[in-house]
Length: 532
Ligand code: MEZ
Image 1: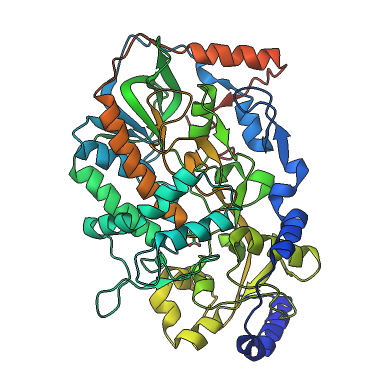
Image 2: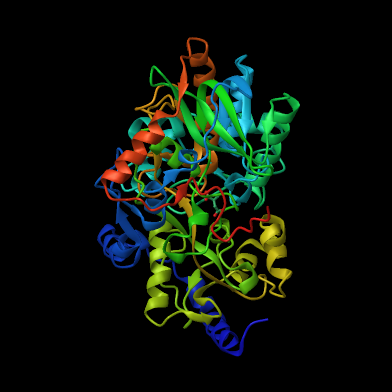
């Protein structure tokens, strides 16, 4: 399976393994990290960004591909929709059928509200499903939410909104309890205690996992709970625009049936945007670990209606995407592989960085090695080694199959036995650190009754997120958004609905000289096949 050049390099990895394992890898100093990030992290590549010319974040920068969507018009400028014909009427409209949307819908339903989910693919087609290594919570004796806060605050470059991060860590133990009671099969020892591991940048072992398919297991339970509660889920239906009323508050959304092309009107007293990430915009041509529908739709809907973004210029590249074989290019290699002991090693067999630095630092170090001739050639570019046989040496024979069985099988399908040979990795676009700005209760600051949860939120993690804090935030902020939306819906009186904001946005674009003829949200990746 490996090329001759790769085999030669593997010999060097094997030759240095014993000595590497006998030496404690060094952590970088703050100054070293800073220098590395500025030189190699994609967030610092000026040509990857463009200035936003309209809307609340005018004058700030965003990835070029996102800016292009922010500079596009609504498809409803041309395709007129009759708002007097209401197809769905509900208290709480949840846009997005992933972990955050499902958690919100469950809690809104629990609070007695009428709630419905619309999702452009199927419930569970979401980044939640793709998360592998685990979910953080400080629920062991040697740990505390304060410790969790400090790790995440430092890891996010001290930029997280304190109120949001405080909620994340304080409510984490209850999130695990809730999931456990829903039926999530967390890894437990013979005494029934949760097995926990380290992630990059954690000072305690607080990663709770379901082998290496933690997100899929969590999503399976959330989906079952939504369906058991008979919460309506409108699948293959995208939200293409928010609707406001004559008081300026959000009043629902215009939906697009992805199969028939028909528009539908959903009237709602509160709306939760839970549309997830943006990996399928492939910023700076990176491959992605994200699911097919990750095209930043919620950011566009919220922004066009007047909600500001926060940290839209900071993106997470997961250090270890698959670099080889080509069939898996960009797929996630969970950080848990490094939590279990595998080191990052360059083509000469040198361990050039601590395996559990924070993600932005690890990714930058891999990019540096490859840029400086220390990477291994692959059909798509370059990669470095993740020395997976170390896991079996450290944890004992059978550890890989027991702890990361999905990863093991994924590679075996392509003739690579990660118990015996190292694997080749390179950063892959994994997460948007930024998103729509919210307050502690989950409401946007600019538009009444509009809430955001999950990856579409900016500010929870600051400018870099630690492993396992995303599965956590979708639960904590999803649940809170559902409760808050249900409570608020009781007091909302809706006025006459309108789409005036799309005309106002079009005028702003025109005044800025931006008549691109393009429309957004994108809904499906640029390379999607449209067969109708
Ligand atoms: O939080 C994540 O992004 C995660 C758990 C990913 C992983 O490496 O498994």
